[in-house]
Length: 368
Image (cartoon, rainbow, N blue to C red; front, top):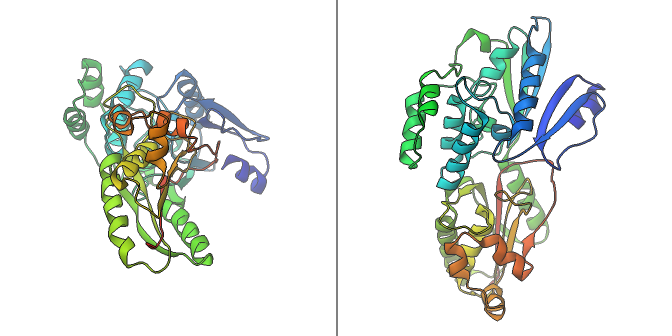
């Protein structure tokens, strides 16, 4: 996004924080890399410099904010009384709990000095235009990147309820920070000169895939771009949907879906929600002839691994058995990346330089 801005406008002053490996050459904008999905000190320091750039701006100034998925972890400024370690612990706990992105970002906002409209408040009275790429179900600007330029209507008590429901023990420092939450409410005068536009969204990736498939004579059914839930539960439902459609087919059918599935961590394996979806789907299909599938995160990173996702086919389980792999045991320990690495069925795209959430495709051939 920063590279495109400079191509259009020329060198600009600014700071961009992106994950390791995603930097692009810019002439004026400084590119800082940091850890994701759990924040680190590099993100903390870069966020402080970003806020310093906004200090002292006047009504004649213009700020362009480029926001995409990952900003919730990369843009990090703990609320007063919290340390980076506190934020890291909360992030890691929520990631392992299976909490959907809306719940995670609700908590993140109330523990931050920059999310929930606070970036826009820091830029005021300058004019601020935020261009956002959505990686969240529903494309709500208040959820994308935890809404740093959008007013926040939730209350700290709701964040406490999320932590309690997910079984996260709330330290005293976190409880105290929530009591002093500084999110900016909708209608706050400091948001009067702020505008946020969503310029790319998950539905576009599904539409592009559908167009390509139809050009190749494949019928397409889009199941939705905002599907959420536990990865293995969603896989079970989609396996049933694929099996139900297959008997009446006379030509191939492609089922497309997006959204963000989650994983409740039960074991110590290496996995991610898309790979776990594929493993659970393979187990649910039990080698059904004529059904192949792919599930990937569109940023090229599934979970914390530099793997986009995986592919499966009718022979997945038989090939696994030949290698002595136990797919059910590996699913139980959230070890899906190890499973597909052994089969050579991982999708490794490298940095895609965008993020419009999960992408799933199930191709169903007619029964012979």
